[in-house]
Length: 491
Image 1 (cartoon, rainbow, N blue to C red):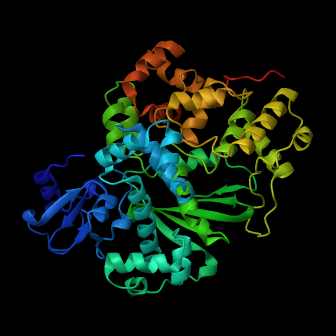
Image 2 (cartoon, rainbow, N blue to C red):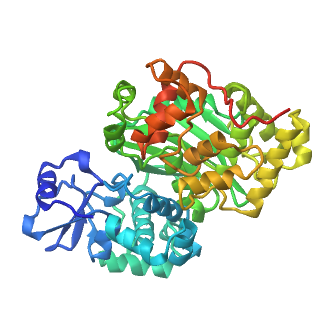
Protein backbone atom coordinates (compact mmCIF):
# COMPACT_ATOMS: atom_id res chain seq x y z
CA UNK A 1 0.00 0.00 0.00
CA UNK A 2 1.55 3.30 -1.15
CA UNK A 3 1.19 6.36 1.08
CA UNK A 4 1.82 9.90 -0.13
CA UNK A 5 4.56 11.20 2.20
CA UNK A 6 3.73 14.84 1.62
CA UNK A 7 0.01 14.35 2.24
CA UNK A 8 0.66 12.23 5.35
CA UNK A 9 2.99 14.87 6.75
CA UNK A 10 0.41 17.63 6.22
CA UNK A 11 -2.14 15.52 8.09
CA UNK A 12 0.37 14.93 10.89
CA UNK A 13 1.05 18.66 11.23
CA UNK A 14 -2.68 19.40 11.30
CA UNK A 15 -3.37 16.51 13.72
CA UNK A 16 -6.40 15.78 11.55
CA UNK A 17 -8.62 13.31 13.44
CA UNK A 18 -10.40 12.33 10.22
CA UNK A 19 -7.33 10.31 9.27
CA UNK A 20 -6.80 8.60 12.62
CA UNK A 21 -6.25 4.90 11.95
CA UNK A 22 -5.49 5.34 8.25
CA UNK A 23 -1.73 5.39 8.75
CA UNK A 24 0.94 5.55 11.47
CA UNK A 25 4.02 7.73 11.64
CA UNK A 26 7.28 5.97 12.49
CA UNK A 27 10.00 8.30 13.78
CA UNK A 28 13.49 7.07 12.94
CA UNK A 29 15.23 9.17 15.59
CA UNK A 30 13.15 7.86 18.50
CA UNK A 31 12.12 4.39 17.31
CA UNK A 32 8.48 5.20 18.15
CA UNK A 33 5.34 5.03 15.98
CA UNK A 34 2.38 7.38 16.52
CA UNK A 35 -1.13 8.14 15.38
CA UNK A 36 -1.66 11.22 13.17
CA UNK A 37 -3.28 12.96 16.15
CA UNK A 38 -0.33 12.50 18.53
CA UNK A 39 0.08 15.62 20.76
CA UNK A 40 3.88 15.34 20.76
CA UNK A 41 5.95 17.86 18.83
CA UNK A 42 5.95 16.81 15.15
CA UNK A 43 9.19 15.27 13.89
CA UNK A 44 10.96 16.48 10.76
CA UNK A 45 9.74 14.97 7.51
CA UNK A 46 13.11 13.38 6.77
CA UNK A 47 12.81 11.43 10.03
CA UNK A 48 9.37 10.03 9.23
CA UNK A 49 8.28 6.72 7.74
CA UNK A 50 4.56 6.36 7.06
CA UNK A 51 3.06 2.88 7.28
CA UNK A 52 -0.56 1.70 6.89
CA UNK A 53 -0.93 -0.34 10.09
CA UNK A 54 0.40 -0.68 13.61
CA UNK A 55 1.53 -4.20 12.71
CA UNK A 56 3.66 -2.87 9.87
CA UNK A 57 5.24 -0.36 12.24
CA UNK A 58 6.04 -3.01 14.83
CA UNK A 59 7.36 -5.38 12.17
CA UNK A 60 9.69 -2.55 11.07
CA UNK A 61 11.08 -2.39 14.61
CA UNK A 62 9.19 0.59 16.04
CA UNK A 63 7.43 0.62 19.41
CA UNK A 64 4.02 2.17 20.25
CA UNK A 65 3.88 5.73 21.54
CA UNK A 66 2.87 6.07 25.18
CA UNK A 67 1.20 9.44 24.62
CA UNK A 68 -1.16 8.86 21.68
CA UNK A 69 -1.59 5.11 22.44
CA UNK A 70 -1.96 3.43 19.00
CA UNK A 71 -4.11 0.72 20.59
CA UNK A 72 -6.88 3.33 20.88
CA UNK A 73 -6.93 4.19 17.16
CA UNK A 74 -9.96 3.18 15.07
CA UNK A 75 -9.33 -0.25 13.57
CA UNK A 76 -9.56 0.39 9.86
CA UNK A 77 -7.45 1.31 6.88
CA UNK A 78 -7.96 2.91 3.48
CA UNK A 79 -7.80 -0.45 1.68
CA UNK A 80 -11.08 -1.70 3.14
CA UNK A 81 -13.48 -2.61 0.38
CA UNK A 82 -10.66 -3.31 -2.09
CA UNK A 83 -9.55 -6.74 -0.82
CA UNK A 84 -12.31 -9.03 0.35
CA UNK A 85 -9.79 -11.81 1.05
CA UNK A 86 -7.84 -9.61 3.48
CA UNK A 87 -11.06 -8.49 5.20
CA UNK A 88 -12.16 -12.10 5.64
CA UNK A 89 -8.71 -13.15 6.83
CA UNK A 90 -8.68 -10.37 9.44
CA UNK A 91 -12.11 -11.46 10.69
CA UNK A 92 -10.80 -15.01 11.10
CA UNK A 93 -7.64 -13.78 12.85
CA UNK A 94 -9.78 -11.74 15.26
CA UNK A 95 -11.80 -14.88 15.94
CA UNK A 96 -8.59 -16.72 16.87
CA UNK A 97 -7.72 -18.56 13.65
CA UNK A 98 -3.97 -18.20 14.29
CA UNK A 99 -4.14 -19.05 18.00
CA UNK A 100 -4.42 -22.76 17.25
CA UNK A 101 -3.81 -22.95 13.49
CA UNK A 102 -1.21 -21.54 11.12
CA UNK A 103 -1.16 -19.35 8.01
CA UNK A 104 -1.51 -22.38 5.74
CA UNK A 105 -4.77 -23.33 7.49
CA UNK A 106 -5.99 -19.73 7.30
CA UNK A 107 -5.29 -19.53 3.57
CA UNK A 108 -7.00 -22.88 2.96
CA UNK A 109 -10.17 -21.64 4.68
CA UNK A 110 -10.16 -18.68 2.29
CA UNK A 111 -9.58 -20.85 -0.77
CA UNK A 112 -6.27 -19.23 -1.71
CA UNK A 113 -2.60 -20.17 -1.47
CA UNK A 114 -0.49 -19.34 1.56
CA UNK A 115 2.03 -17.35 -0.52
CA UNK A 116 -0.76 -15.34 -2.15
CA UNK A 117 -2.29 -14.54 1.24
CA UNK A 118 1.09 -13.29 2.48
CA UNK A 119 1.44 -11.13 -0.64
CA UNK A 120 -2.01 -9.63 -0.08
CA UNK A 121 -1.18 -8.81 3.54
CA UNK A 122 2.13 -7.26 2.52
CA UNK A 123 0.48 -5.15 -0.16
CA UNK A 124 -2.52 -3.94 1.83
CA UNK A 125 -1.28 -4.00 5.45
CA UNK A 126 2.50 -3.94 5.18
CA UNK A 127 2.84 -6.92 7.52
CA UNK A 128 2.39 -10.69 7.63
CA UNK A 129 -0.71 -12.40 9.06
CA UNK A 130 1.34 -13.62 12.05
CA UNK A 131 2.56 -10.09 12.81
CA UNK A 132 -1.01 -8.79 12.58
CA UNK A 133 -2.14 -11.37 15.16
CA UNK A 134 0.82 -10.66 17.45
CA UNK A 135 0.32 -6.88 17.26
CA UNK A 136 -3.36 -7.21 18.16
CA UNK A 137 -2.32 -9.22 21.20
CA UNK A 138 0.28 -6.68 22.30
CA UNK A 139 -2.00 -3.68 21.83
CA UNK A 140 -4.84 -5.36 23.73
CA UNK A 141 -2.42 -6.11 26.58
CA UNK A 142 -1.27 -2.49 26.58
CA UNK A 143 -4.87 -1.28 26.74
CA UNK A 144 -5.60 -3.60 29.65
CA UNK A 145 -2.52 -2.32 31.47
CA UNK A 146 -3.62 1.29 31.03
CA UNK A 147 -7.37 0.94 31.52
CA UNK A 148 -7.86 -1.82 34.08
CA UNK A 149 -6.55 -2.88 37.49
CA UNK A 150 -5.86 -6.48 36.44
CA UNK A 151 -2.64 -8.04 37.78
CA UNK A 152 -0.01 -8.59 35.07
CA UNK A 153 -0.50 -12.36 35.07
CA UNK A 154 -4.18 -11.83 34.29
CA UNK A 155 -3.38 -9.20 31.65
CA UNK A 156 -1.16 -11.76 29.91
CA UNK A 157 -3.93 -14.37 30.01
CA UNK A 158 -6.69 -11.97 28.94
CA UNK A 159 -4.73 -10.67 25.95
CA UNK A 160 -3.94 -14.11 24.57
CA UNK A 161 -0.32 -14.68 25.60
CA UNK A 162 0.51 -18.32 26.17
CA UNK A 163 2.76 -17.63 29.15
CA UNK A 164 3.77 -14.81 31.47
CA UNK A 165 7.37 -15.31 30.35
CA UNK A 166 6.48 -14.65 26.72
CA UNK A 167 4.39 -11.66 27.82
CA UNK A 168 7.30 -10.13 29.75
CA UNK A 169 9.81 -10.82 26.96
CA UNK A 170 7.58 -9.13 24.40
CA UNK A 171 7.18 -5.97 26.45
CA UNK A 172 10.88 -5.84 27.28
CA UNK A 173 11.66 -6.09 23.55
CA UNK A 174 9.16 -3.36 22.63
CA UNK A 175 9.50 -0.94 25.53
CA UNK A 176 12.81 -1.88 27.18
CA UNK A 177 10.96 -2.16 30.49
CA UNK A 178 8.65 -4.62 32.26
CA UNK A 179 4.94 -4.26 31.48
CA UNK A 180 4.09 -3.14 35.02
CA UNK A 181 6.05 0.09 34.53
CA UNK A 182 3.63 1.15 31.78
CA UNK A 183 0.78 1.42 34.27
CA UNK A 184 0.43 5.08 35.18
CA UNK A 185 -2.69 4.92 37.32
CA UNK A 186 -4.98 2.49 39.06
CA UNK A 187 -8.41 1.84 37.66
CA UNK A 188 -11.30 3.13 39.74
CA UNK A 189 -13.59 0.15 39.17
CA UNK A 190 -12.96 -3.02 41.22
CA UNK A 191 -12.44 -6.19 39.11
CA UNK A 192 -15.66 -7.81 40.32
CA UNK A 193 -17.62 -5.18 38.40
CA UNK A 194 -16.12 -6.41 35.15
CA UNK A 195 -13.48 -5.30 32.68
CA UNK A 196 -14.37 -2.06 30.88
CA UNK A 197 -12.60 -1.09 27.67
CA UNK A 198 -13.10 1.65 25.10
CA UNK A 199 -13.58 0.29 21.58
CA UNK A 200 -12.97 3.12 19.08
CA UNK A 201 -14.77 3.69 15.80
CA UNK A 202 -14.50 6.16 12.95
CA UNK A 203 -17.22 8.81 13.34
CA UNK A 204 -19.99 9.40 12.69
CA UNK A 205 -21.82 6.53 14.37
CA UNK A 206 -25.61 6.32 14.26
CA UNK A 207 -26.04 4.86 17.75
CA UNK A 208 -29.83 5.49 17.93
CA UNK A 209 -30.35 3.49 14.73
CA UNK A 210 -28.19 0.63 16.02
CA UNK A 211 -30.05 0.51 19.34
CA UNK A 212 -33.43 0.72 17.60
CA UNK A 213 -32.55 -2.23 15.38
CA UNK A 214 -31.34 -4.33 18.32
CA UNK A 215 -34.25 -3.27 20.57
CA UNK A 216 -36.82 -4.40 18.00
CA UNK A 217 -35.23 -7.85 17.99
CA UNK A 218 -34.19 -8.16 21.66
CA UNK A 219 -34.98 -11.62 23.02
CA UNK A 220 -36.65 -11.71 26.41
CA UNK A 221 -34.19 -12.86 29.09
CA UNK A 222 -31.18 -12.75 26.73
CA UNK A 223 -30.98 -9.06 25.80
CA UNK A 224 -31.94 -5.71 27.30
CA UNK A 225 -31.88 -2.36 25.51
CA UNK A 226 -32.30 0.96 27.30
CA UNK A 227 -31.78 4.56 26.20
CA UNK A 228 -28.02 4.35 25.82
CA UNK A 229 -27.16 0.78 26.75
CA UNK A 230 -27.22 -2.69 25.24
CA UNK A 231 -26.86 -5.68 27.57
CA UNK A 232 -26.91 -9.36 26.78
CA UNK A 233 -26.09 -12.72 28.29
CA UNK A 234 -23.22 -14.58 26.68
CA UNK A 235 -22.10 -18.20 26.74
CA UNK A 236 -18.78 -19.61 25.57
CA UNK A 237 -17.40 -23.09 26.20
CA UNK A 238 -19.94 -23.90 28.93
CA UNK A 239 -19.23 -20.65 30.83
CA UNK A 240 -21.77 -17.82 31.02
CA UNK A 241 -21.55 -14.11 31.65
CA UNK A 242 -22.75 -10.82 30.23
CA UNK A 243 -21.66 -7.77 28.29
CA UNK A 244 -22.84 -4.19 28.63
CA UNK A 245 -22.16 -1.68 25.86
CA UNK A 246 -22.66 2.08 26.04
CA UNK A 247 -21.96 4.92 23.63
CA UNK A 248 -19.28 7.46 24.56
CA UNK A 249 -19.47 9.93 21.64
CA UNK A 250 -17.00 12.35 23.22
CA UNK A 251 -14.34 9.64 22.82
CA UNK A 252 -15.59 8.33 19.44
CA UNK A 253 -15.85 4.93 21.07
CA UNK A 254 -18.16 2.38 22.62
CA UNK A 255 -17.56 1.53 26.26
CA UNK A 256 -17.83 -2.24 26.70
CA UNK A 257 -17.99 -3.90 30.11
CA UNK A 258 -17.35 -7.65 30.12
CA UNK A 259 -18.31 -9.84 33.06
CA UNK A 260 -17.09 -13.35 32.30
CA UNK A 261 -15.32 -15.93 34.46
CA UNK A 262 -12.65 -16.85 31.89
CA UNK A 263 -10.11 -14.14 31.14
CA UNK A 264 -8.60 -16.07 28.23
CA UNK A 265 -11.89 -15.58 26.37
CA UNK A 266 -11.54 -11.78 26.38
CA UNK A 267 -9.96 -11.41 22.90
CA UNK A 268 -12.75 -13.47 21.37
CA UNK A 269 -15.41 -11.52 23.29
CA UNK A 270 -13.98 -8.20 22.13
CA UNK A 271 -13.87 -9.45 18.54
CA UNK A 272 -17.54 -10.44 18.78
CA UNK A 273 -18.54 -7.06 20.23
CA UNK A 274 -16.67 -5.28 17.44
CA UNK A 275 -18.47 -7.42 14.87
CA UNK A 276 -21.85 -6.96 16.54
CA UNK A 277 -21.55 -3.17 16.43
CA UNK A 278 -19.68 -2.98 13.10
CA UNK A 279 -16.82 -0.94 14.54
CA UNK A 280 -14.48 -1.46 11.57
CA UNK A 281 -16.72 0.41 9.12
CA UNK A 282 -15.48 3.56 7.39
CA UNK A 283 -18.57 5.77 6.88
CA UNK A 284 -16.73 8.10 4.51
CA UNK A 285 -15.70 5.33 2.13
CA UNK A 286 -19.20 3.83 2.19
CA UNK A 287 -20.95 7.17 1.65
CA UNK A 288 -18.65 7.98 -1.27
CA UNK A 289 -19.98 4.92 -3.14
CA UNK A 290 -23.62 4.85 -2.05
CA UNK A 291 -24.01 8.61 -2.29
CA UNK A 292 -23.61 8.47 -6.07
CA UNK A 293 -27.05 6.85 -6.39
CA UNK A 294 -29.95 9.30 -6.59
CA UNK A 295 -32.15 7.11 -4.37
CA UNK A 296 -29.52 6.60 -1.69
CA UNK A 297 -28.08 10.13 -1.67
CA UNK A 298 -30.70 11.63 0.71
CA UNK A 299 -30.75 8.46 2.85
CA UNK A 300 -26.98 8.50 3.34
CA UNK A 301 -27.05 12.23 4.06
CA UNK A 302 -29.77 11.68 6.70
CA UNK A 303 -27.89 8.81 8.42
CA UNK A 304 -24.18 9.18 7.58
CA UNK A 305 -23.07 6.90 10.42
CA UNK A 306 -25.44 3.99 9.80
CA UNK A 307 -23.84 0.59 10.50
CA UNK A 308 -24.82 -2.97 9.68
CA UNK A 309 -25.75 -4.70 12.97
CA UNK A 310 -23.71 -7.86 13.27
CA UNK A 311 -24.21 -10.91 15.43
CA UNK A 312 -22.95 -12.22 18.72
CA UNK A 313 -23.22 -15.73 17.31
CA UNK A 314 -23.84 -17.06 13.80
CA UNK A 315 -26.00 -19.94 14.96
CA UNK A 316 -28.25 -17.54 16.85
CA UNK A 317 -28.75 -15.35 13.77
CA UNK A 318 -29.50 -18.37 11.58
CA UNK A 319 -32.08 -19.65 14.09
CA UNK A 320 -33.72 -16.21 14.27
CA UNK A 321 -33.86 -16.00 10.47
CA UNK A 322 -35.56 -19.38 10.14
CA UNK A 323 -37.99 -18.60 12.96
CA UNK A 324 -38.91 -15.30 11.29
CA UNK A 325 -39.86 -16.61 7.88
CA UNK A 326 -43.28 -15.33 6.75
CA UNK A 327 -43.98 -13.55 10.04
CA UNK A 328 -43.31 -10.10 11.48
CA UNK A 329 -40.22 -9.16 13.48
CA UNK A 330 -42.17 -8.91 16.81
CA UNK A 331 -43.72 -12.35 16.27
CA UNK A 332 -40.33 -13.85 15.35
CA UNK A 333 -38.78 -12.31 18.45
CA UNK A 334 -41.47 -13.82 20.66
CA UNK A 335 -40.83 -17.24 19.08
CA UNK A 336 -37.12 -16.83 19.78
CA UNK A 337 -37.96 -16.04 23.40
CA UNK A 338 -40.01 -19.23 23.64
CA UNK A 339 -37.11 -21.20 22.17
CA UNK A 340 -34.71 -19.69 24.72
CA UNK A 341 -37.03 -20.50 27.61
CA UNK A 342 -37.35 -24.11 26.40
CA UNK A 343 -33.71 -24.80 25.50
CA UNK A 344 -31.42 -22.08 26.88
CA UNK A 345 -29.26 -22.37 29.97
CA UNK A 346 -30.43 -20.50 33.06
CA UNK A 347 -28.08 -17.87 34.44
CA UNK A 348 -27.21 -17.82 38.11
CA UNK A 349 -27.06 -14.02 38.28
CA UNK A 350 -30.20 -12.00 38.95
CA UNK A 351 -29.51 -8.94 36.79
CA UNK A 352 -32.58 -9.20 34.60
CA UNK A 353 -30.79 -11.43 32.11
CA UNK A 354 -32.09 -14.91 32.79
CA UNK A 355 -30.92 -17.12 29.93
CA UNK A 356 -28.11 -17.59 27.45
CA UNK A 357 -29.16 -18.33 23.89
CA UNK A 358 -29.18 -22.11 23.42
CA UNK A 359 -26.23 -23.86 21.85
CA UNK A 360 -26.61 -26.32 18.93
CA UNK A 361 -26.31 -29.15 21.45
CA UNK A 362 -29.33 -27.81 23.36
CA UNK A 363 -31.57 -27.36 20.32
CA UNK A 364 -32.99 -30.86 20.04
CA UNK A 365 -36.09 -32.11 18.18
CA UNK A 366 -37.79 -33.02 21.47
CA UNK A 367 -37.30 -29.50 22.87
CA UNK A 368 -38.44 -27.92 19.59
CA UNK A 369 -41.58 -30.06 19.56
CA UNK A 370 -42.90 -28.17 22.60
CA UNK A 371 -42.96 -24.82 20.73
CA UNK A 372 -45.98 -25.49 18.53
CA UNK A 373 -44.23 -24.78 15.24
CA UNK A 374 -44.79 -26.49 11.87
CA UNK A 375 -42.96 -29.79 11.50
CA UNK A 376 -40.96 -28.51 8.52
CA UNK A 377 -39.63 -25.59 10.57
CA UNK A 378 -38.72 -27.88 13.47
CA UNK A 379 -36.91 -30.13 11.00
CA UNK A 380 -35.02 -27.16 9.53
CA UNK A 381 -33.89 -25.97 12.97
CA UNK A 382 -32.83 -29.48 13.97
CA UNK A 383 -30.86 -29.87 10.73
CA UNK A 384 -29.21 -26.49 11.29
CA UNK A 385 -28.15 -27.47 14.83
CA UNK A 386 -26.74 -30.77 13.55
CA UNK A 387 -24.80 -28.95 10.82
CA UNK A 388 -23.18 -26.60 13.36
CA UNK A 389 -22.32 -29.50 15.65
CA UNK A 390 -20.59 -31.13 12.68
CA UNK A 391 -18.84 -27.92 11.52
CA UNK A 392 -18.09 -25.31 14.17
CA UNK A 393 -16.84 -22.95 11.43
CA UNK A 394 -20.10 -22.99 9.46
CA UNK A 395 -20.67 -19.27 10.04
CA UNK A 396 -17.06 -18.15 9.62
CA UNK A 397 -16.08 -16.21 6.45
CA UNK A 398 -15.62 -18.32 3.32
CA UNK A 399 -13.48 -17.82 0.23
CA UNK A 400 -16.20 -15.59 -1.21
CA UNK A 401 -19.73 -14.38 -0.63
CA UNK A 402 -20.92 -16.72 -3.39
CA UNK A 403 -19.31 -19.68 -1.62
CA UNK A 404 -20.91 -18.72 1.69
CA UNK A 405 -24.35 -18.49 0.08
CA UNK A 406 -23.86 -21.82 -1.71
CA UNK A 407 -22.81 -23.59 1.50
CA UNK A 408 -25.70 -22.14 3.50
CA UNK A 409 -28.42 -22.86 0.94
CA UNK A 410 -27.56 -26.55 1.08
CA UNK A 411 -29.31 -26.59 4.47
CA UNK A 412 -33.04 -27.18 4.67
CA UNK A 413 -35.04 -23.99 5.24
CA UNK A 414 -32.27 -21.64 4.08
CA UNK A 415 -32.80 -20.02 0.70
CA UNK A 416 -31.12 -17.11 -1.04
CA UNK A 417 -32.63 -14.38 1.18
CA UNK A 418 -31.78 -16.11 4.45
CA UNK A 419 -28.28 -17.01 3.28
CA UNK A 420 -27.50 -13.39 2.38
CA UNK A 421 -29.02 -12.21 5.68
CA UNK A 422 -26.78 -14.62 7.63
CA UNK A 423 -23.74 -13.61 5.56
CA UNK A 424 -24.49 -9.94 6.18
CA UNK A 425 -24.94 -10.16 9.93
CA UNK A 426 -22.90 -13.20 11.03
CA UNK A 427 -20.05 -13.32 8.49
CA UNK A 428 -19.46 -9.59 8.07
CA UNK A 429 -19.98 -9.74 4.30
CA UNK A 430 -20.34 -6.08 3.36
CA UNK A 431 -21.59 -6.93 -0.12
CA UNK A 432 -24.39 -9.29 0.93
CA UNK A 433 -27.63 -8.15 -0.66
CA UNK A 434 -31.30 -9.04 -0.23
CA UNK A 435 -32.60 -8.35 -3.74
CA UNK A 436 -35.98 -9.96 -3.12
CA UNK A 437 -36.60 -8.28 0.23
CA UNK A 438 -40.04 -6.69 0.40
CA UNK A 439 -38.88 -3.61 2.35
CA UNK A 440 -36.01 -2.99 -0.09
CA UNK A 441 -38.40 -3.18 -3.02
CA UNK A 442 -40.94 -0.88 -1.34
CA UNK A 443 -38.29 1.73 -0.59
CA UNK A 444 -37.03 1.70 -4.18
CA UNK A 445 -40.58 1.76 -5.57
CA UNK A 446 -41.27 5.02 -3.77
CA UNK A 447 -38.49 6.55 -5.88
CA UNK A 448 -39.83 5.27 -9.20
CA UNK A 449 -37.65 2.16 -9.50
CA UNK A 450 -39.35 -0.98 -10.81
CA UNK A 451 -39.26 -3.25 -7.75
CA UNK A 452 -38.29 -6.64 -9.15
CA UNK A 453 -35.31 -8.68 -7.98
CA UNK A 454 -33.73 -8.40 -11.44
CA UNK A 455 -33.93 -4.61 -11.66
CA UNK A 456 -32.89 -4.21 -8.03
CA UNK A 457 -29.81 -6.37 -8.59
CA UNK A 458 -28.89 -4.42 -11.70
CA UNK A 459 -29.09 -1.11 -9.86
CA UNK A 460 -27.28 -2.46 -6.81
CA UNK A 461 -24.28 -3.45 -8.89
CA UNK A 462 -23.15 0.18 -8.58
CA UNK A 463 -23.28 -0.10 -4.78
CA UNK A 464 -20.53 -2.75 -4.51
CA UNK A 465 -18.81 -3.59 -2.21
CA UNK A 466 -21.21 -1.90 0.26
CA UNK A 467 -24.57 -3.36 -0.76
CA UNK A 468 -25.30 -4.51 2.82
CA UNK A 469 -25.19 -0.88 3.96
CA UNK A 470 -27.58 0.06 1.16
CA UNK A 471 -30.00 -2.55 2.53
CA UNK A 472 -29.85 -0.94 5.98
CA UNK A 473 -30.46 2.54 4.54
CA UNK A 474 -33.46 1.27 2.59
CA UNK A 475 -34.80 -0.60 5.61
CA UNK A 476 -34.49 2.48 7.81
CA UNK A 477 -36.43 4.52 5.23
CA UNK A 478 -39.28 2.00 5.15
CA UNK A 479 -41.98 2.46 7.78
CA UNK A 480 -43.81 -0.81 7.09
CA UNK A 481 -43.03 -3.68 9.49
CA UNK A 482 -40.69 -6.13 7.79
CA UNK A 483 -42.03 -9.58 7.00
CA UNK A 484 -39.73 -12.16 5.51
CA UNK A 485 -41.57 -13.54 2.49
CA UNK A 486 -38.67 -15.48 1.00
CA UNK A 487 -37.37 -18.98 1.75
CA UNK A 488 -40.82 -19.96 3.04
CA UNK A 489 -41.18 -23.27 4.85
CA UNK A 490 -44.47 -24.98 4.19
CA UNK A 491 -46.59 -25.73 7.20
